[in-house]
Image (cartoon, rainbow, N blue to C red):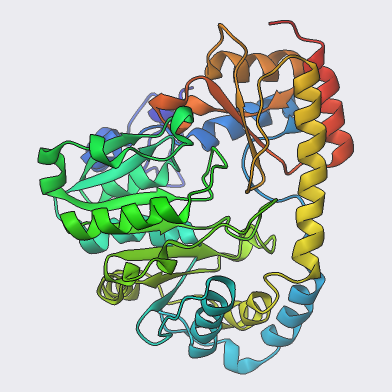
Length: 415
């Protein structure tokens, strides 16, 4: 049975026959909002379905798909949470913008990590994960028909969030020959006149590319010239293998036209904790906070108090050791792929490897074949946008031994 033929509205006494709709039950096609039909398929859901089907069939699947760290949350964070959750003061509703200690810790992190001064009262808003903030931002600032500039390849939520706000997506291509940076001068003038928001993301998912301060200066000037809010997704800033990636807020005057999203998910292996923050342009953050105050009741205060301790150790030994583990995994994967004849480049940041497909094959063909013939799950680049059909993404969230096993399997395939 196709998943899009599911019916709803049955009472417990009725038979759940998907082909027969009882009298008085609203058909799914009528109850779903029309905007949902505009959403592209969320690629990770389909990948997870195919993976689960393979596992159910008894196959030994190695998962390089969704970027969810396999390493546990650091012990010092667990210890802090144990204390915080025992404090009754943390059990009540929390302000949707975040409690004062968390916002102050976020502001201190921005100062110590990037040399950026932000006001914790007006320039920091807590988020239930950066995905939540990204998803709500267009609702806060985009009117129906406004244009949102969305990079391709890029995180799919930039597009879906725009659709939920009844905005219009204008795709801005990223290309390998440009270091996966957008060509700002290629965006049509008529599009710029209607543009309200521009999503950027560096270190980049899926390409792992980093932006230079020179590019950020251009982006800030571009946003100021065209009265466009720049929303920089900076979730991978603390996972890097060379120079620390910069923040767009390091550019003078950036807070006049930019906000930036930061997440604890990947740095501290806290994906399930849903803890992040946005900072920068005060009016945009106030608008985002207005949406959040109507739709959520704030992050669990015990999590926020735990995050205060985590943010103090963004460059501590736990994170340093974790980065070393990712470096070993990347070395194993890339050296093995090179020996097998693949064209690969070392990522400067993130825990992703962005790998060009063998000549003559597109990303869907490669991803399908790796799963079917090697029981290896990767993400096809086409799921991130039409300019990425020649690439696949590996998430280095697999142990060294399993990464080597995957390489051994891939090496047996001929292309």
